Image 1 (tube, rainbow over the protein chains, first blue to last red):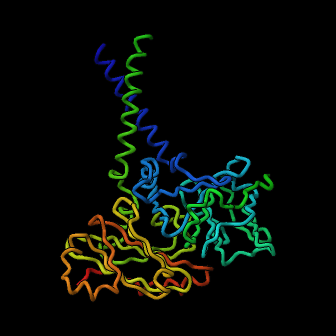
Image 2 (image 1 turned 30 degrees about the vertical axis):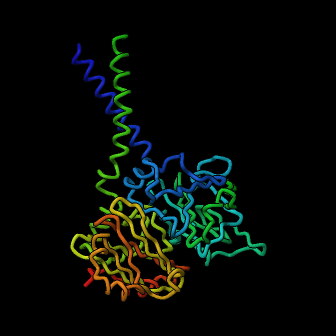
Length: 190
Length: 181
């Protein structure tokens, strides 16, 4: 019986331990993140102070973080109301952004790959976008073409949006808790 | 079934330990992290332009499609490394990572006055070994001290719209990575 005891303990240990690791390393840790609305940034990623979960996530995904010296990257996987971003719906991103020399907004599927579409459009840059008179902008993410700033979502069920700000003025990160980020709203869902 | 409770509890405690150890060990054990992926692209101490990411293939996860990137996996065990970064129309950034993806130095063309620039990457031992008088003539060159012997240099150039991609790519051909003389 002692042998059975040992086997059960070992199997439970290995399964629960490795399972938890697999689950928690599939994305950066939920703690240690800076949140503005639905946007999350991991300011310490790529530094010696990064938490072990974020480090494990980068080691597993094969991504190189944007360092603080280069800029800031924000990611969103749900809208402001907490609904998961769905490529079959129309999602609106509207507002103002942090000051930066350039920014880019791109869409990725669950595995961190770009989203396939016939228009071959994967991202917007701050230089391409059409701004409104008051300096705000609106980008719509939808499976089919829309007038204005449109990015195709290719009908995927889940996607994430990554907002990267390059060459931000010094101090932006220190004050970023108060920074303004655009709102994410689901406009219509079939 | 009561006898099952004890081994299960012992198992869960063990599971907690397994979890902690495996999370901490993952950066060292990963066979497919950024360093491993870039190392497969070519020889070390040589700069390679990364192919544009597509929905079906990308060198690294979540690459920015509006950036042209070149990478150099370095090994300083024999010699220091000389890195040349050209200026591109909009924004050029160079970042130095350790083998485990920690950034220890980053610079962009604004800091370098929008011109191309040269950097010398060396370990602290190599820096200490520089002849004293030579250090004076090197003063106008940028010396970056690497805390590790192996790591990654990434040069990223921003592309404001897809039509400018070929121009930026051509300008990035002037970038290089080579062992210092």
